[in-house]
Length: 343
Ligand code: DOR
Ligand code: ZN
Image (cartoon, rainbow, N blue to C red):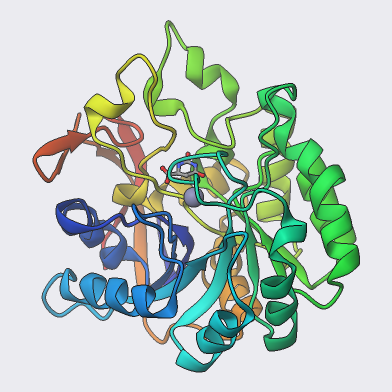
């Protein structure tokens, strides 16, 4: 079986920098027309000038002939000035601002300690209509790791939304039924991205036959009932839910260690894994809307002009992939994916 789609985009991606960027970019560029590029580098991308320089490095790392377009983001801090938001709007290549609660995940140390401290920037974003991208988890040590998304909705997102009713928000990589319900109730100013790994795996994947560091990401995988709610949201008719891989490469040795990094690498099969999830749900006819149409609509961008064709075929995944001086272990390493790209 083959299906042809308007070329999809990835609305949440980690590309890293330097030799890591050079190692992973080809996978995204082969599949996706554009990607919203996360700013959690070391140091983070907090200014339009830094985003411009990072964008040039990404463009320079594209495979020959690639027309892949990076859509840049800024990293919100407690001190982001309103003027930086105005500059982001003016520059044309910054499409959103990312909110990491301080300490929530990889390179989030300079993130927001309390959203009330970022009022000036949030107000400017509301005024200039720049979407806020949320890593929606509380960081409090007393909150169970599996409850951190749900608690963020109550404690942080509800008052934030009340104070900035005009702000457009993407709740990134939603993992729970609670988040799906919250986004639906919030209406069209709010959207959510969903990863392929959260559609295909529940939390048992982390402990299958032993501890599996390559199935560890944040927000952490949840129970089966939540996975089912995500599949229903992705394959349903609601245009608030669209594709964002959250593909997050880490060198093998930084995950296979005493305190391993969070992140699952999926860009090597960035559309194929979603095709599998949609096929499993008997909803392949909804894949184009989720992967290629709803994201551009939310971001106010045109859909891509070209198409890709994928074929249902058992396709091996290497046990590891080159990652600069190191290697990385992709999702389904040493196993197979059910689809492949043919054109
Ligand atoms: O699993 C994750 N990895 N979650 C994040 O929020 C960050 C990401 C990364 O940058 O590695
Ligand atoms: Zn991410």
